[in-house]
Length: 293
Image (cartoon, rainbow, N blue to C red; front, side, top):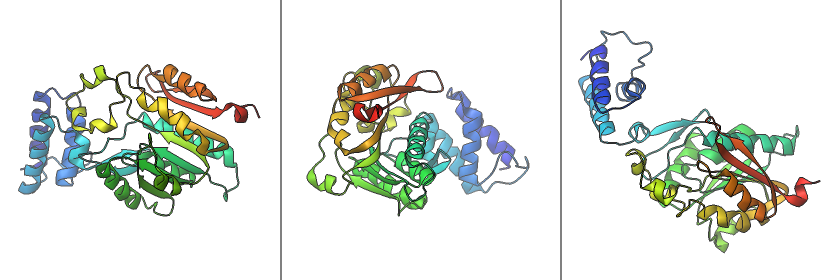
Protein backbone atom coordinates (compact mmCIF):
# COMPACT_ATOMS: atom_id res chain seq x y z
CA UNK A 1 0.00 0.00 0.00
CA UNK A 2 1.33 3.43 -0.90
CA UNK A 3 1.49 6.10 1.78
CA UNK A 4 -1.22 8.36 0.35
CA UNK A 5 -3.67 5.47 0.19
CA UNK A 6 -2.92 4.50 3.78
CA UNK A 7 -3.30 8.08 4.93
CA UNK A 8 -6.72 8.38 3.27
CA UNK A 9 -7.85 5.06 4.76
CA UNK A 10 -6.82 6.03 8.29
CA UNK A 11 -8.42 9.44 8.04
CA UNK A 12 -11.66 7.95 6.75
CA UNK A 13 -11.81 5.48 9.66
CA UNK A 14 -11.30 8.27 12.18
CA UNK A 15 -13.62 10.79 10.52
CA UNK A 16 -16.47 8.31 10.25
CA UNK A 17 -16.30 7.84 14.03
CA UNK A 18 -16.72 11.59 14.51
CA UNK A 19 -13.13 12.25 15.57
CA UNK A 20 -12.64 16.05 15.37
CA UNK A 21 -8.84 15.68 15.18
CA UNK A 22 -8.76 13.03 12.45
CA UNK A 23 -6.10 14.76 10.33
CA UNK A 24 -3.71 15.27 13.24
CA UNK A 25 -4.22 11.76 14.63
CA UNK A 26 -3.75 10.22 11.18
CA UNK A 27 -0.32 11.82 10.95
CA UNK A 28 0.58 10.72 14.48
CA UNK A 29 -0.47 7.12 13.84
CA UNK A 30 1.40 6.93 10.54
CA UNK A 31 4.55 8.28 12.10
CA UNK A 32 4.27 5.79 14.97
CA UNK A 33 3.24 2.68 13.06
CA UNK A 34 5.07 3.17 9.76
CA UNK A 35 7.92 5.41 10.90
CA UNK A 36 6.65 7.88 8.35
CA UNK A 37 6.68 11.67 8.63
CA UNK A 38 3.53 12.85 6.84
CA UNK A 39 4.93 16.36 6.49
CA UNK A 40 7.69 15.25 4.14
CA UNK A 41 6.32 12.04 2.63
CA UNK A 42 6.15 11.18 -1.06
CA UNK A 43 2.53 10.18 -1.84
CA UNK A 44 3.60 7.13 -3.83
CA UNK A 45 6.02 5.78 -1.21
CA UNK A 46 5.43 2.13 -0.43
CA UNK A 47 4.50 1.24 3.16
CA UNK A 48 5.49 -2.13 4.54
CA UNK A 49 2.28 -4.26 4.74
CA UNK A 50 2.86 -5.13 8.41
CA UNK A 51 3.33 -1.45 9.30
CA UNK A 52 0.20 -0.52 7.35
CA UNK A 53 -1.76 -3.20 9.20
CA UNK A 54 -0.41 -1.86 12.51
CA UNK A 55 -1.58 1.65 11.59
CA UNK A 56 -5.06 0.50 10.57
CA UNK A 57 -5.40 -1.50 13.79
CA UNK A 58 -4.42 1.62 15.77
CA UNK A 59 -7.12 3.66 14.02
CA UNK A 60 -9.70 1.00 14.89
CA UNK A 61 -8.57 1.09 18.52
CA UNK A 62 -9.12 4.84 18.52
CA UNK A 63 -12.65 4.36 17.20
CA UNK A 64 -13.33 2.16 20.23
CA UNK A 65 -12.23 5.01 22.50
CA UNK A 66 -8.68 4.07 23.46
CA UNK A 67 -6.66 7.28 23.98
CA UNK A 68 -4.23 8.14 21.20
CA UNK A 69 -1.51 8.63 23.83
CA UNK A 70 -1.95 5.06 25.10
CA UNK A 71 -1.74 3.69 21.57
CA UNK A 72 1.44 5.64 20.83
CA UNK A 73 2.86 4.70 24.24
CA UNK A 74 4.29 8.15 24.85
CA UNK A 75 3.37 11.82 24.95
CA UNK A 76 5.18 15.14 25.26
CA UNK A 77 4.99 17.44 28.25
CA UNK A 78 6.86 20.73 28.62
CA UNK A 79 9.12 19.75 25.71
CA UNK A 80 10.05 16.33 27.09
CA UNK A 81 8.77 12.87 26.16
CA UNK A 82 7.07 10.57 28.67
CA UNK A 83 6.00 6.94 28.57
CA UNK A 84 2.24 6.60 29.11
CA UNK A 85 -0.22 3.74 28.91
CA UNK A 86 -2.92 1.84 30.72
CA UNK A 87 -2.87 2.71 34.42
CA UNK A 88 -1.38 6.20 34.33
CA UNK A 89 -2.85 9.67 33.83
CA UNK A 90 -2.02 11.33 30.51
CA UNK A 91 -0.15 14.66 30.93
CA UNK A 92 -2.27 17.69 29.98
CA UNK A 93 -1.17 21.08 28.58
CA UNK A 94 -2.73 22.88 31.57
CA UNK A 95 -0.37 21.07 33.92
CA UNK A 96 2.55 22.71 32.16
CA UNK A 97 1.43 25.93 33.86
CA UNK A 98 2.05 24.27 37.23
CA UNK A 99 5.54 23.18 36.20
CA UNK A 100 6.25 26.63 34.79
CA UNK A 101 5.20 28.30 38.05
CA UNK A 102 7.39 25.95 40.10
CA UNK A 103 10.41 26.60 37.88
CA UNK A 104 9.90 30.36 38.14
CA UNK A 105 9.53 30.16 41.93
CA UNK A 106 12.74 28.16 42.24
CA UNK A 107 14.59 30.68 40.10
CA UNK A 108 13.34 33.52 42.30
CA UNK A 109 14.43 31.68 45.46
CA UNK A 110 17.88 30.64 44.30
CA UNK A 111 18.74 33.61 42.12
CA UNK A 112 21.94 33.26 40.13
CA UNK A 113 23.61 30.92 42.59
CA UNK A 114 23.91 27.70 40.55
CA UNK A 115 24.92 25.76 43.67
CA UNK A 116 21.48 26.41 45.20
CA UNK A 117 18.94 24.84 42.89
CA UNK A 118 16.26 23.98 45.40
CA UNK A 119 14.30 20.94 46.51
CA UNK A 120 10.81 19.93 45.39
CA UNK A 121 8.27 17.39 46.66
CA UNK A 122 5.54 16.48 44.18
CA UNK A 123 2.33 14.83 45.44
CA UNK A 124 0.22 12.47 43.30
CA UNK A 125 2.96 12.24 40.68
CA UNK A 126 1.48 9.77 38.18
CA UNK A 127 3.84 9.57 35.19
CA UNK A 128 6.31 11.85 36.96
CA UNK A 129 5.92 14.57 34.34
CA UNK A 130 5.93 17.43 36.88
CA UNK A 131 9.01 16.55 38.98
CA UNK A 132 10.97 15.40 35.92
CA UNK A 133 10.21 18.54 33.91
CA UNK A 134 11.00 20.77 36.91
CA UNK A 135 14.26 18.92 37.56
CA UNK A 136 15.39 19.17 33.94
CA UNK A 137 14.56 22.85 33.63
CA UNK A 138 15.75 24.05 37.03
CA UNK A 139 18.30 21.48 38.19
CA UNK A 140 16.32 21.07 41.42
CA UNK A 141 16.34 17.86 43.46
CA UNK A 142 12.82 16.45 43.13
CA UNK A 143 10.88 13.74 44.95
CA UNK A 144 7.60 12.39 43.61
CA UNK A 145 5.00 10.38 45.55
CA UNK A 146 2.49 8.09 43.82
CA UNK A 147 0.02 5.65 45.39
CA UNK A 148 -0.48 3.42 42.32
CA UNK A 149 2.22 0.79 41.75
CA UNK A 150 1.25 0.64 38.09
CA UNK A 151 1.68 4.40 37.63
CA UNK A 152 4.90 4.33 39.64
CA UNK A 153 6.42 1.95 37.10
CA UNK A 154 5.81 4.52 34.36
CA UNK A 155 7.32 7.19 36.63
CA UNK A 156 10.49 5.13 37.09
CA UNK A 157 10.76 4.45 33.35
CA UNK A 158 10.36 8.16 32.66
CA UNK A 159 13.16 9.03 35.05
CA UNK A 160 15.44 6.79 32.98
CA UNK A 161 14.05 8.02 29.65
CA UNK A 162 14.77 11.63 30.63
CA UNK A 163 18.12 10.86 32.25
CA UNK A 164 17.21 12.35 35.62
CA UNK A 165 18.28 9.47 37.86
CA UNK A 166 20.55 11.80 39.83
CA UNK A 167 17.85 14.44 40.42
CA UNK A 168 14.47 12.67 40.67
CA UNK A 169 13.29 10.00 43.13
CA UNK A 170 10.01 8.12 42.67
CA UNK A 171 8.35 6.94 45.89
CA UNK A 172 5.34 4.74 46.54
CA UNK A 173 3.03 6.25 49.13
CA UNK A 174 -0.30 7.74 50.15
CA UNK A 175 -0.08 11.53 50.34
CA UNK A 176 -3.24 11.69 52.47
CA UNK A 177 -1.81 9.35 55.11
CA UNK A 178 2.00 9.39 54.75
CA UNK A 179 3.68 6.82 56.99
CA UNK A 180 7.02 7.12 58.73
CA UNK A 181 8.84 4.98 56.19
CA UNK A 182 7.80 7.32 53.38
CA UNK A 183 8.60 10.50 55.31
CA UNK A 184 12.08 9.23 56.17
CA UNK A 185 12.88 9.10 52.45
CA UNK A 186 11.99 12.75 51.97
CA UNK A 187 13.93 15.87 52.95
CA UNK A 188 12.79 17.43 56.22
CA UNK A 189 12.30 20.72 54.39
CA UNK A 190 11.79 21.62 50.74
CA UNK A 191 11.41 24.82 48.75
CA UNK A 192 8.39 23.84 46.69
CA UNK A 193 5.53 21.38 47.06
CA UNK A 194 3.59 20.72 43.87
CA UNK A 195 0.44 18.66 43.37
CA UNK A 196 -1.97 17.79 40.59
CA UNK A 197 -4.33 15.66 42.69
CA UNK A 198 -7.54 13.94 41.58
CA UNK A 199 -10.14 16.71 41.37
CA UNK A 200 -13.08 15.55 39.26
CA UNK A 201 -16.47 15.67 41.00
CA UNK A 202 -18.97 12.82 41.17
CA UNK A 203 -21.10 14.42 38.46
CA UNK A 204 -18.07 14.97 36.20
CA UNK A 205 -17.07 11.32 36.61
CA UNK A 206 -20.49 10.36 35.26
CA UNK A 207 -20.01 12.52 32.16
CA UNK A 208 -16.49 11.54 31.11
CA UNK A 209 -15.57 11.25 27.44
CA UNK A 210 -14.98 7.65 26.40
CA UNK A 211 -11.23 8.29 26.06
CA UNK A 212 -10.93 9.59 29.62
CA UNK A 213 -12.76 6.52 30.97
CA UNK A 214 -9.66 4.52 30.01
CA UNK A 215 -7.57 6.52 32.49
CA UNK A 216 -7.35 5.33 36.11
CA UNK A 217 -10.22 6.48 38.32
CA UNK A 218 -7.83 6.81 41.25
CA UNK A 219 -6.07 9.63 39.37
CA UNK A 220 -9.31 11.41 38.46
CA UNK A 221 -11.94 11.24 41.22
CA UNK A 222 -11.57 13.83 43.95
CA UNK A 223 -14.72 13.08 45.94
CA UNK A 224 -18.28 14.36 45.71
CA UNK A 225 -17.22 17.98 45.11
CA UNK A 226 -13.70 17.18 43.84
CA UNK A 227 -11.98 18.82 46.83
CA UNK A 228 -11.15 15.82 49.06
CA UNK A 229 -7.41 15.98 48.48
CA UNK A 230 -7.15 19.75 48.94
CA UNK A 231 -8.88 19.51 52.31
CA UNK A 232 -6.03 17.34 53.55
CA UNK A 233 -2.76 18.07 51.77
CA UNK A 234 -2.22 21.70 52.78
CA UNK A 235 -2.43 20.99 56.49
CA UNK A 236 -0.62 17.66 56.28
CA UNK A 237 2.33 18.85 54.20
CA UNK A 238 2.87 22.52 55.03
CA UNK A 239 5.42 21.71 57.76
CA UNK A 240 7.69 20.28 55.06
CA UNK A 241 8.06 23.69 53.45
CA UNK A 242 11.12 25.78 54.15
CA UNK A 243 10.66 29.22 55.69
CA UNK A 244 10.02 30.87 52.32
CA UNK A 245 8.67 27.79 50.60
CA UNK A 246 5.69 27.69 48.26
CA UNK A 247 2.78 25.30 47.71
CA UNK A 248 1.57 25.08 44.08
CA UNK A 249 -1.41 23.01 42.94
CA UNK A 250 -3.55 22.47 39.87
CA UNK A 251 -7.34 22.66 40.21
CA UNK A 252 -10.37 21.69 38.16
CA UNK A 253 -12.68 24.04 36.30
CA UNK A 254 -14.33 26.52 38.68
CA UNK A 255 -12.45 25.14 41.72
CA UNK A 256 -9.66 27.70 42.07
CA UNK A 257 -11.45 30.01 44.50
CA UNK A 258 -12.57 27.12 46.71
CA UNK A 259 -9.05 25.66 46.75
CA UNK A 260 -7.60 29.10 47.49
CA UNK A 261 -9.91 29.37 50.51
CA UNK A 262 -8.81 25.95 51.77
CA UNK A 263 -5.17 26.96 51.41
CA UNK A 264 -5.76 30.27 53.20
CA UNK A 265 -7.37 28.45 56.14
CA UNK A 266 -4.02 26.73 56.64
CA UNK A 267 -2.21 30.06 56.91
CA UNK A 268 -1.14 30.69 53.32
CA UNK A 269 -1.20 33.94 51.36
CA UNK A 270 -2.40 32.84 47.93
CA UNK A 271 -2.73 33.72 44.27
CA UNK A 272 -4.38 32.19 41.20
CA UNK A 273 -3.03 31.68 37.67
CA UNK A 274 -5.52 31.38 34.80
CA UNK A 275 -5.18 28.80 32.04
CA UNK A 276 -5.44 29.18 28.25
CA UNK A 277 -9.23 29.38 28.53
CA UNK A 278 -9.09 32.15 31.15
CA UNK A 279 -10.15 29.76 33.91
CA UNK A 280 -8.45 29.75 37.30
CA UNK A 281 -6.21 26.70 37.09
CA UNK A 282 -3.16 27.04 39.36
CA UNK A 283 -3.36 28.07 43.01
CA UNK A 284 -0.15 28.96 44.80
CA UNK A 285 0.69 30.23 48.24
CA UNK A 286 3.34 30.97 50.82
CA UNK A 287 2.80 30.73 54.54
CA UNK A 288 1.71 34.14 55.81
CA UNK A 289 4.79 34.75 57.98
CA UNK A 290 7.01 34.19 54.91
CA UNK A 291 4.87 36.24 52.54
CA UNK A 292 5.17 39.42 54.62
CA UNK A 293 8.94 39.26 55.02
